[in-house]
Amino acid sequence: MQAAVETRDLTRRFGAITAVDALTLRIEKGEVFGLLGPNGSGKTTTIRMLCGLLEPSTGSALVTGIDVTVAPEQIKQRIGYMAQKVGVYEDLTVAENLDFYAGIYGLRGGAARTRLGEVVALLALGDRLGQLAGQLSGGWKQRLALACALIHQPALLFLDEPTAGVDPAARRRFWRTIHDLAGAGTTVLVTTHYMDEAEQCARLAMMSRGHLIALGTPAEVAAQVGGRTLEDAFVILQERDEGRSN
Amino acid sequence: MPRFWPMFRKEFIQMRRDRLTFGMMIGIPVIQLLVFGYAIQTDVRNLPTVVLDESRTPESRDLIAAFQNTGNFRVVAHVDGRPALDAAIARGDAQAAIVVPYDYPRNLVRGTTATVQVIVDAADPLSSQAALNAAAGVAQLRNLAILSRAAGRTAIPVEARVRPRYNPGLRSPNYIVPGLVGVILTMTMVLITAMAIVRERERGTLEQLIVTPITKTELMLGKIAPYVGVGLMQMTAVLLLGRFVFDVPLTGNILLLYGVSLIFIIASLSLGLFVSTLVRTQQQAMQASFGFMLPNILLSGFMFPRQAMPEIAQWLGLLVPLTYFLKVVRGILLKGVGLDALWREVLILAAFAVVLIVASVRRFHKTLD
Image (cartoon, rainbow over all chains, first blue to last red; front, side):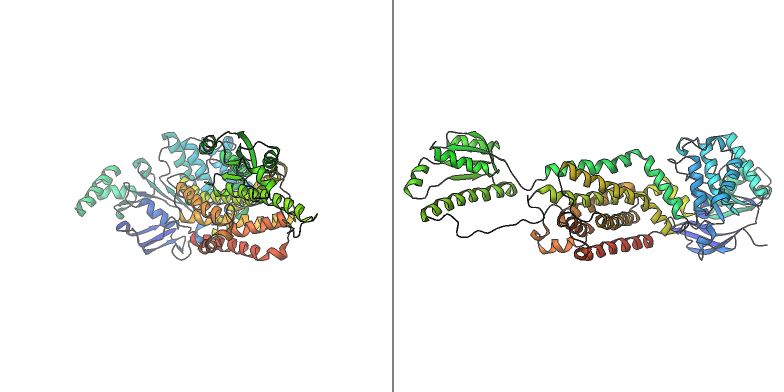
């Protein structure tokens, strides 16, 4: 079966710094895949390369079977992306934001109305449609951003630290939505700092200083360091990696 | 271009909602028009003048009245000595002085040359020029009258009949206001679009936008299109104010004027777009736009006639769109000429627009680096 994402030696340098170093990954369709790592470990750069926002320096990446370096524009209709810094227009209302992205993704007329109704229901935005996005709390803004990213029913969803600055109840609701989407066949690639969120991923990749230090289900990763908690595994593996460089 | 309209609609809503910018877009033209319209008077009239009349005769009073009648001299005071006269000019109370000596009437009668002295504060050459010309004119008229009478002629031998076409009253506003349409459009159109893309970059919405399938052309055109309407509104406001506040005649084909202005507006917006692909922050965008304004105002012939400039400045002036637009707008509004006289300028403006849009689209990359 074709993978949702397949990278081979994916590398990105910024001047002398190698942000992502020969990353080789395979993400299956319908999977919730977690990308774990401290700040500066290359998670965001990886996602940005997969979305076509940054060009890889070397290596290759296939997203839904399409090479990101060859046809980045073809990928864009099939993916949804939520950046760390939520990219909704604060001077537009919730409804205007949704209308805009529906239009940009080529939805028209009745099809657009039906789909707008669906995402509004999915993320319970019905009561907020007339409110300016800039007046929403962090949790609601994040929901709006997710709704915008989902409007064209992408096969693949990239979420870059989606729950940063969101309260625990909203985080839990957010993850329930993620699982619903995965259940319906959407592949989700999510980066996170939170261990409880990492536990909810089907598989994870741990990154440190741009490269992979562990890969597998949460239980498999924990087993690599003697079956302790994921958090222990994360700390031990990362220290081991940083020790190697010194 | 299916994604042009959503982009257009979004920009339009944002523009309308941004009260400060919207207010600026309408406020700036009105304020500029009033400031420039009233302040720029290259035809200096009513120069404050002091009079030192040493002869105090009907002849001298008659002469002083002749000076006043030119409209260039406004007598503000009579002084009774040189020191008072010098002080008035030094203080700036007066910018001109007329001195009629004791022997003025006597010399007139005798047939020797009667002199009158006119002193002008020439620190500002522009304001003194008109006074100097007027003074010479007064003397010439007197001479003619006296000589003709002596020669027993009732008509003067030669007369140059000057016909100042297109602006017979030689009024500055007639010249300044049409030019101001171009200056205001350049200023606001470039600035607004220069900010347009960097603002999205700074707010993080550009990142979200470039992961969508929108094409570069759709993005660029959708961004500038709503402001075309703003430009036309600004232009209308300036023309109406010019007509009813400054009595500027709107002679030519107004429809043609709007057509050419549309091209100029698109060229200015494209220029702003191009600036926005060169800068990374709104601050830089603003600086770049203002940096661009100055050569436009100075080299285009808006304030200073291009013919008076050194050759290199004239050449540089050919690089700014405003130069061509000024020629068109003055041509249509003042001279009432049509496309047959202005097609070259119109073509050049269109070329500016096309080249700048293409260059902006090529420079803009749908990536973050």
